[in-house]
Amino acid sequence: MTAEHVLDEHPVAPVRQLANKVPEVTICFWIVKLLTTGMGETASDLLARTLGPIPAVALGGLALMASLVVQFTLRRYVAWAYWTAVAMVSVFGTMAADVLHVGLGVPYAVSTPAFLTALAAVFALWYARERTLSIHAVRTRRREAFYWAAVLATFALGTAAGDLTATIGFGYLGSVALFAAAICAPALAHRFGALGSVTAFWTAYVITRPLGASLADWMALPGTRGGLGLGLGPVTLAWTAAIIGFVGYLAVPQRDRGAHAAA
Image (cartoon, rainbow, N blue to C red; front, side):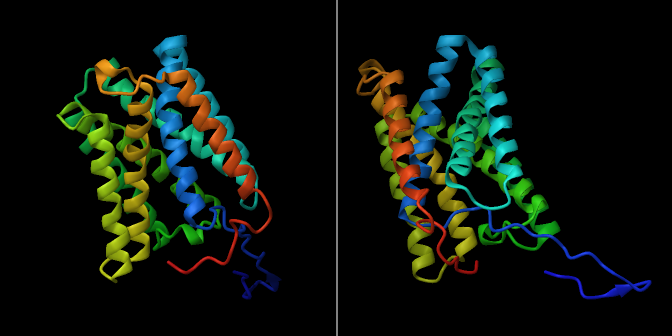
């Protein structure tokens, strides 16, 4: 948007906007999003076991800040920078939920609604200031800040929700089935006109977190905990390699920067 008014005979400087900083929402978007959720879950656990909880949280926080600094310095969407930031949010979001439960003894039944409240607060403030929650309008620094605050909250919420279902009787494989079914609800509701595109997107975005994390936990954890026993290291490396492959594909110009539909 360019200001056309004149004040004291001096033109007002144009309002500078960014190109949209979020990729086109395609099937590849959801695949990579799901992969980052699983990788973040197992990478967080692997770092905590290898380095100890405090050094792991410190390292995760530094990696997150570095990735967001890079993301915010760019004036347009760049695949590797965007998805690196998402991956680091996934790792740190997992740590945030785990610190509350393991470090401070907060039950998942308490942290899950707490993170849901935090996400609702981010959305409320975002909408109050910008009058939209659409990811197709992330073209200013302030909207980008709201976007990443919401993303971080969704990852923490999804981690707590996935661990909650896994520990109250569903187990990891049962949680995969539960959230796989749940993610169909916003898709179908939007398909048949019962749910707006923005609400459907953010609902699905939240659910992908516990879906991917439960799947990765099921693959990595030993049979005594209901898993396949593949190990945290191999699962983290395999999912990271898959992320790199998909992001490399998406980095081809225009492959995930098609025309955005208004939402």
